Image 1 (tube, helix red, strand yellow):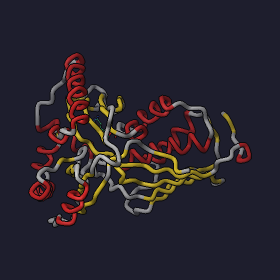
Image 2 (cartoon, helix red, strand yellow):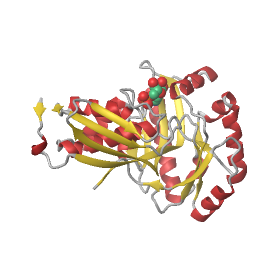
Image 3 (tube, protein in one colour):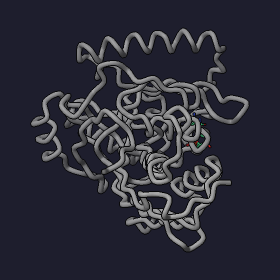
Image 4 (cartoon, helix red, strand yellow):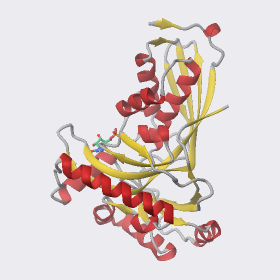
Length: 314
Ligand code: C5P
């Protein structure tokens, strides 16, 4: 084990911006022997972000604090898991770490709020500890921590498959100047394992053969690449969780209906509860947000697409 002394390193504190993600497209297939589900998704980073600060301490432990008192700061926090994992994997011995999370992304909202903090910890510690690790090594670490963590590391617009860990950036993806999302955050959270169970119970999930899935991935890739290029991608928005979730939780179905009536469309992100609509015209997005009347305490906000994942703030 490498025992690193403070004096050997220049960087003892880093800040990282950690963007949320939304699923522009999400299809969920059958449950695999490892308990996860195969999926095909197109994910997009947005500028709704958490901010992390990470610094070394002499307190002999990893300590996590968060601006949102509802977020558990114990070993179950993905930022804690990522730090512990990184130090073990990179065989580094540091006395202690303090991780502070400025939380702007709601918990259990289908926006990868915990996963992006974990990705931020990996990016931050690589810089702080000055370890020679390629991006591919970090992606491997990320996939051991959680299904959405690899995407949160790379970010942008990407086709995602497997249980979430296999990703390929899509060419000419959306960026800060493409348009804007209206994101609506209902005050209710959705537990992800519960949502996958609900899908399994609600339908005969297809245990797809590997060859069939490969064909499906190929066609999703081709169709999405063309639709991003010509701007027709909103026609492809889809989420397998949406209809069963609105049936199981009618209060979310009502928020969806409310948003759809105003914006013309509304798509669930991940397993919920956040929903979004897309506007190529930013002023129309802002106008729609201003006109949005909540029915259950939901919060409407504007989010811009961004072309990367967790990023150091120099
Ligand atoms: O990987 P992560 O910890 O984010 O997954 C949380 C839970 O979501 C898993 O324990 C599993 O129940 C479910 N899940 C799944 N299939 C996926 C991703 C997540 O069943 N592809």
